[in-house]
Length: 368
Image (tube, rainbow, N blue to C red; front, side, top):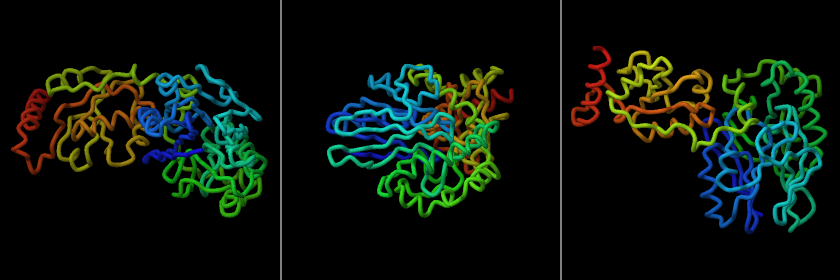
């Protein structure tokens, strides 16, 4: 058995590859899945299983793309009522992966349909080695139940029982593999460490020291606000996200073509350069989110989902990365970027003739 952990910043998401000698499972994959395919190839294994702990609210999952690319089966909670082709799992189900067995526990609370996967490595013993807990239990924290405001208290009760009657029944040595770490808004006070053990969390996780009433009160009051995209990602993941191969390509546009496309009322301009660059000069009416900050959270929070988007970025690499991050939070309509970008007005980079000329053409046309 080999466990590989992958962490991406900004949304503080953890995903995993659980591998045997020839095959592997990917747990809670991010949307851009080339990475897992390359990792599996490097490990010399084939991706045969895709496991979802729940319908993620903070990002778009890569289960559809990964299944399309590899032919692997998707396993997801039965109570999630997913509408794509998958194996629905519930309490007591077991999934076999070579010498390993993954036992399903239903652990609702963060979301109504949540499950956890307990890993048993039968080549070594019959006891639980670790558990993929999704967003039920974190290092130093637990999942927030208030993402569904109408049933927040009901979910808090379920979360308490999922923790105390399911996960904390596992042995102290059992490792904990959460789907998020410090920086995620799926909890309130996660630790920076990526994994823990049941015993350590039982002893030192402050949320687990509360009685039931205090636990419910704590998790249904004074929680940090949730970005707008949290309200749509779960449903997108339930229906199955659009395949990235079917999404618009990022078209390189010169200043004239960019100007023409920007005149469409169903198009907005998004500037992702730094604050000082945007403050120096920008396209009139452009939205601004600094790519160097927590771009996906702010983008999911404020950008309209029903508009095509044109990018003004520092360079092609930033534009491409912006598109990747935007897709991770369900913003799928970035259709082009200003080739050459913009430079800061002072000092003027007179040696960059391509950028200077393009920007001059752009401004002349814009204000004409």
